[in-house]
Picture (cartoon, rainbow, N blue to C red):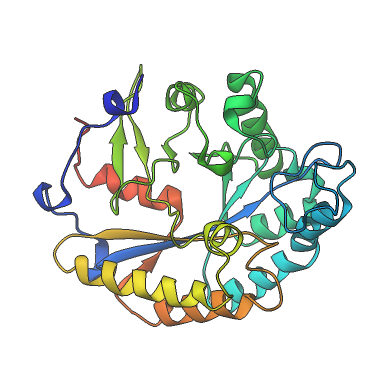
Length: 292
């Protein structure tokens, strides 16, 4: 099924109004991405290129750069989010659930929501058997948490032509790969529709720091600029904003404070809710919105 077959064009100004409980006007959710990088494979991303070019294996500097995030950077996120009483969504590779069990345990103890993020950190279009990959990811999370994950985020937002269909058939309630709206939307599949919860490529540390090469403070500035606009937009109909971080990027010592600062300033607004993806999907379904 092509993208145009999955979702019809819908201007946000011509939809029924969405209302949040308690007079709130918008929802913010923050997603922490935890991945396992295979030292025997080409690294998914790089911070340092080798002197002679190419893709050496083992790629110690780039593997270690990522590993720092799971050893140190993630725990900065824990302190920041605990101090602000915010529950994050943990988008995690199936293999990472056990490989970084201390991270999984910390998220579980805090009531964070676990989201499927591929079994390994690789392009879903290069996975040999996508249905099996989804199933293995689902089972890894279920076995550790006691609950099946409800949401899915493709590694690098990658999907095949079948991904939403396979997710519904595997029991998923929502997906986050379709970054095209400030409100949840319905995606058609070959069985029943699935909710797409707003994610972000703009307030995302991969885009800002690794691709656009901004200084650390850009995360705070962009997050607040985006928040102020969406907050204004939500005066009549609710909106959703995402803040995305990776332990090896915003968990670095020179960047973490900007993540904290943005969250703290947004948290000070009493009419802004901090929810997880599952909570957003449940609210949207109860809002009466019907799939096209």
